[in-house]
Length: 96
Image 1 (spheres, rainbow, N blue to C red):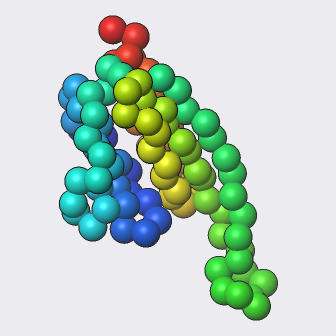
Image 2 (cartoon, rainbow, N blue to C red):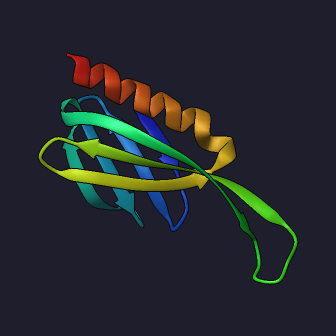
Image 3 (spheres, rainbow, N blue to C red):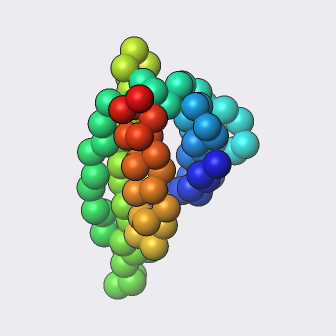
């Protein structure tokens, strides 16, 4: 089982053959991992406060699934390796 926590109280869970996106511990999307088709990555840098100088670096990924659209997810840059591991596991599941 791979779990990655993100912004806005969201979480991605890959549990065997199923992928799920949760928001506030409630399932938002649940789809078979074998339907995974691809991932699009973006690096985001934004200010922590409106007028502050401090910035945070985020990783954004959009996951595409056959028949069920896409799932967007944003997390801290430090959690990107866990997110890459989740995407690699999805690619393995999709390959067969």
